[in-house]
Image 1 (cartoon, rainbow, N blue to C red):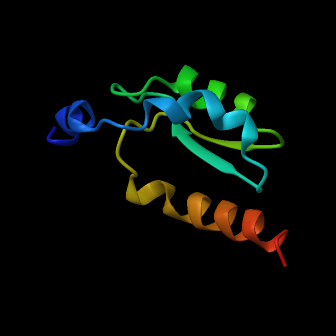
Image 2: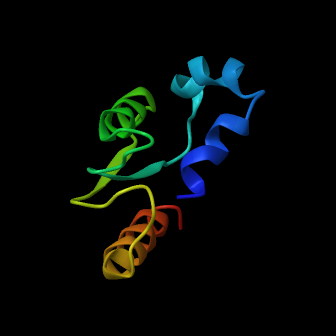
Image 3: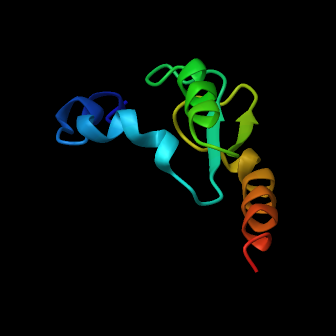
Length: 85
């Protein structure tokens, strides 16, 4: 529950929100479908805004990463970063 409020304390990055299209490195966006703080649609939009980004959807996941998703997350990050070598 504490993480529900800490996002409101962040500031200063607003000017960068419109620049996601400038990201030119391989990007993996990881987002849960049941996130009550940053809705899943935001993750989809981010992945679409970053050229060639890949979206890893965590079905049923909220804002926190669950232990049951770690194997998928680790495997996805490993595969994603292997294209860099």
